[in-house]
Image 1 (cartoon, rainbow, N blue to C red):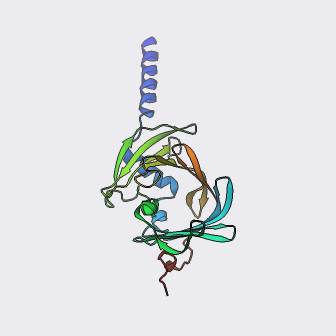
Image 2: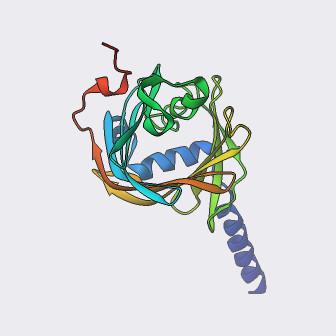
Image 3: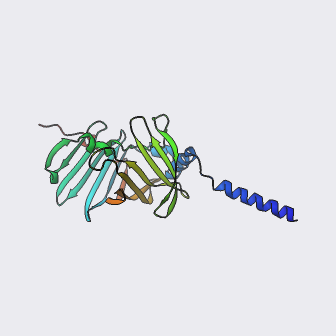
Length: 242
């Protein structure tokens, strides 16, 4: 009887150890995509429009972010009746920054465009190898009290981010990268994602917070996410001067 009990305890212990083993990066990627809505649903998204509030330096402003396949983006923030615009058409990034004296559409420098050009419309965890991304295991850590698995994603053009996935739900709660240029060069940018909600069968983080070396620089609270809206794609390209 004692031998049977000892064997049973050993099996439970061994099972427990096995259950605690970290999944492979391929398993993390597969589970993440499934939990977000699935490959087909995510690939069916061609455009998105997100509306909400951006909090910067203690002040809150309306923000609209429109994105499209081809990694195109258009960000518009209304500040005291004036529009700040940052956009990228897949090749050229440009901006209007009236509070910095940039009142006409002006092409961004490489340093200014770094973050926009590094943002992918389709998740890097879909068709990773075919798209030139390499997935590697990274050390997980607690993110605001949540244990995570880490996955480093890189490519040959310099993309280098570490994604941290909640070990229970396998959804990303933070992404980090090293700033390569500009006044923040060398610092760590951390993007936190939370308040996931279902929108047309897809799980979307409705709150995001950006920090540099632990100091918050921006918070975005989404109030509306529109999947596949009809948009005029000329909004992504820098307007031609008359």
